[in-house]
Length: 276
Image 1 (cartoon, rainbow, N blue to C red):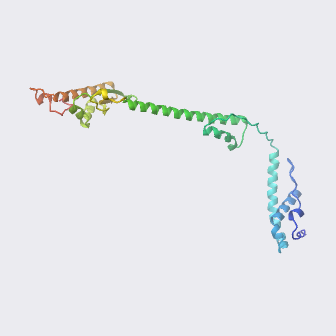
Image 2: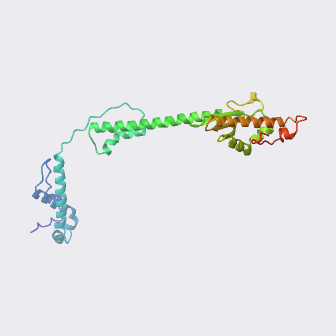
């Protein structure tokens, strides 16, 4: 028969059997688990047991709750006993380091062993070395990118250009030619015609016109034609065509008496195919 309910106002935990203290490395007996589960079940149903239907609660609800708690206690006891067989290494002594500014990745290294579930000193050292190498590589890549960007910015500011890999480059200054010649060479049609005649060269107008070189800003470039191509012959041929065009247009602006348009061509017009 189940024991009578405790009188009102009495402490259930005082009358209930105490849970057996777990001895490290020893499995609890079935009787100890049973007593501990019953004490926990009565503590959980304390309010209901002290009510009007205390006997009914003790008869119907206490046994199943006790059985569930006993099963949980049994599993916890088995896990605790299994852990007892594995020796636990003492924690390493704390390391005192001088306070210094560190990168965010380096600050996170202290938490890596805990995130990975612990480990030996060798594995922790390997992780630290790997993370340090990654951080060093990231810093080196960022520095190289910054250096390349600074070099490119300086190159653009000075107006100097470098030919792409496998290409050749030449320049032809047109700043001091007459205005009509400068305007004509700036149109896309004559540039496209010269590119076709050269067999693969590309032409761009760069720089800025300066009437007085003494008043040029620092780092500025006079007006010129940049020529790039796959071979030195192609680039040189395009450069010669640009020179011929500029000289022909410059001669036409002189209006030399006795020289007809059939000889020198029309002013402001030039055909690279005929050279007039």
